[in-house]
Length: 247
Image (cartoon, rainbow, N blue to C red; front, side, top):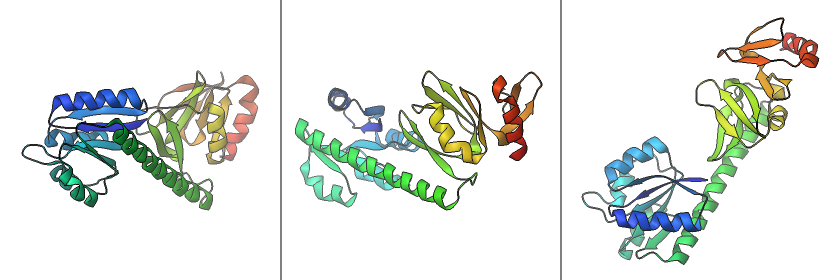
């Protein structure tokens, strides 16, 4: 899913574009729509989109004025406008797409496919950076792993991961400083990624970071640093105690 914001001073134009995108591109996740550059500025800073559709000719501020105000243009831009004389200016902002109103389906499809390709390449580049860091520093708790989610990939330092819990074929990742992450990977995949970082599968559904254990009782239950209580499978208890001593 590609997090997307639509920006146009005409509500009807937003409604039409939203309808077209939902019909043609189910992977475009429209997280917000804005009818003024000021609202768009706030939304972009807050929501960190991967793609924006931006009208150029808006009252008071143009789409270009909005882009000049933003501290980072770390998203893809598709300009949508009734005036094609803005095309040269658009190139200066490295726009990946330029669609003239009334919107032509073929132009829209070409622009979105270009955006998808660019976004995919960025993700691959980030994955490669993380892979290199992990190869150069195996087992380092500051290494980050890429966690696939419904909205893309989140890169989390392994030290910040408290535990992973298998839920209906997916995995809930509990992190110290943010909301839980739900990944389509099963808990077995996380075991492969994390066992070199002091993680241990105490149960078929539970993978824990031994650095975040608070206590272990005689009944076979762990208490994690955040207060979560996790069962240790009976057949795993002796091995688990040996692992803890090592880590």
